[in-house]
Length: 234
Image (cartoon, rainbow, N blue to C red; front, side, top):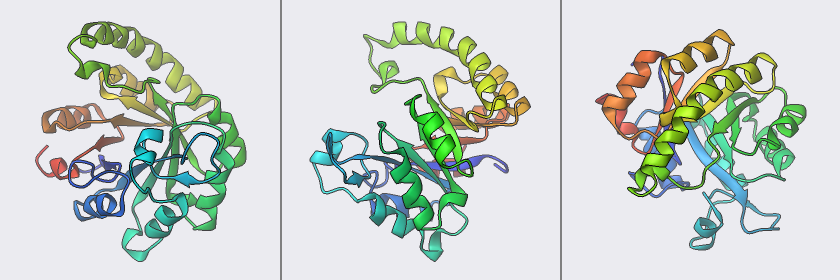
């Protein structure tokens, strides 16, 4: 699929547990163009930044520190592979920027977040780093639950129309460079509008080859999956 960026979610979370060196290396072996990973404080109020999806994830294991993860990505094997640093909360934006610069990784990194208040902070601190707005702001997969699927689909229908206006406007105004959208909000209209605004559209989290192929056909920039081996069959 020439042109479509192949992105591993937390590395390759269906091959090896996410946000670990094993998962990152599995994604690399599968030929990803970009690897996404999560960053947050080890616990509320902590100064230690770790690679974990949430505080529970960080507490149940010994997570990599941000510095350990970046040192891994700074190795020669990762030259040419982009990074999507997904900030799960707010308040540590400049520390992430400083760490990326210290490892020489800023030029191939995109910082993404659902936290709207973080966007102008990152933009001001690091205008050279691409910035992605993740939507919608949710912490659970409501489409995966039989009790919440119907209202979630109804909300998605409204969200599609709003995002097709708000997202490209934010790109044109220079506030962000990319939209990081759940697949349920992605439409051909959104893909066209983002391209016309000069931005990028990344879609999460897609573990279905048929859906990957459909997204490729409408011209999204990249697809984020838990199993990057799927790109070979989509």
